[in-house]
Amino acid sequence: MASSFFKYRRRKKGNQITELGPALFILLVVVLFPLAALIYMGMGVGCGWFLNHMCTRAVAVVRSDQMPVALTKQEDAWKSSGLAKFTGARIVSNTAVRADINGKPGDDVVRVTTIVEIQPFVQIPFVPLGPYPFTFKGERPIEERGII
Image 1: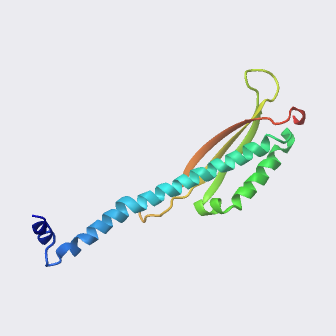
Image 2: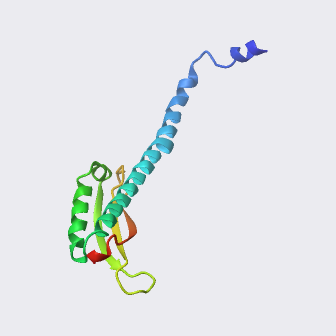
């Protein structure tokens, strides 16, 4: 019984090559390219989150009048990194404010809102794919009370 299974498993004419084209098409178009685009967008989102995290950390340790300088330094460092260049991300806006929590007077936390646009991985002709904006919001307590 086992020998008959192996005997009739494949035809000798070799027509299996006709299935290779559609199989490769399905593999590439349905699986590989969308998966690469998904990984690329995930890296772009991580890149934007990292910018927001860096800015939130930097702004929490400076005085209120030095917050724009701290944001600019972090943006420049982020732009020069390889991850930002790879994802084609662009900063739309990056703002920081000091806020009160629980309605008590005094600046307790710093809130940073970052909007980053990420270009699509592949441009398809005749299909308009614009940049995708992502908004990140970070909050961190102020490190030293004496620097307010």
